[in-house]
Length: 102
Image (cartoon, rainbow, N blue to C red):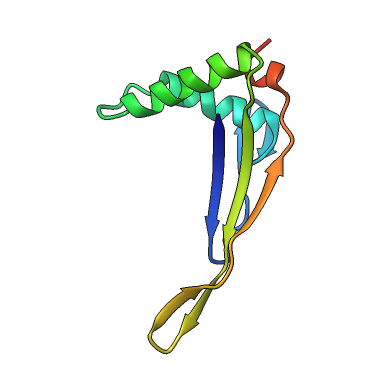
């Protein structure tokens, strides 16, 4: 299972308030909160979110490989538009038990 946090241009990792604390994208708490939000999403057309959350939780509970990647694509403006000359990929460190809610 691979979870991707993709950022383009000069975008930075954001934060999410969970309870009384702010957690940056890429933390185990953030991954768990987003997975829970996806699982509870009742908006029409959100079936894909619910399926993805179920698959993430199932993989985490069974202690299968779950990787949380940070992908950055710096974008350079050119005379004819824009170009991406590189893609940077790093991996966040997450705890499967926390992600599974154990």
